[in-house]
Length: 263
Image (tube, rainbow, N blue to C red; front, side, top):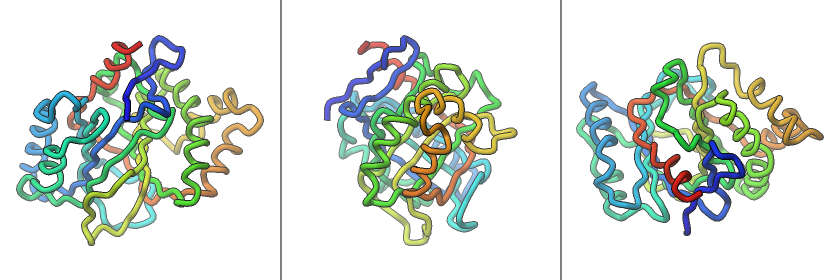
């Protein structure tokens, strides 16, 4: 799987194209002791131990639920580890089988970036300069028979609209990822998904992506606009959980630098 980040014709954006997908190891974790948060943070800061193929890690702490189909199976942290091509066996062994004390691993999965729908600024340095923004994380379940149609909608409409919003600094990044394999799932975890979408937004007054995406989609999809595009999505997917999260560690600046190097 060759990896290159293209700039999609704009000097300020890095965007991963269909043939250039990153591999992400995601861990959904319940921390049962305050010290566990520190242990997870220390681990994410020292991501270079995974070798040259690792592009960084990010750790997010659950803040609030924006939308959920269930009041159970909550978790405290989501960790994303980014790699070129493959996740090394040593990283899988450590991240899936070796947990800090009082950290309960609920789910570990391999994600691939959704074609043309993984967009961030070339100079991405995390959310430190915009503390009012929180990480919106959507856990999405797309009907298996409709995955091809879903990718097409993301590639043709959602990705370009998101790129416009990132370019205008109305959102921090837009990172759509789809589950390639579930490595571990705790039987107690009742929710299921096969997509994770990460986007930095201002949580205060946030009522969903309708207002943000409406104008952008009208530009890239004038015949359908927001209503037409999202009607297609809502027909083939559900969102079992949507949360706001605080960034604990955002050691993933290399994602933007890769785009600058490979222009």
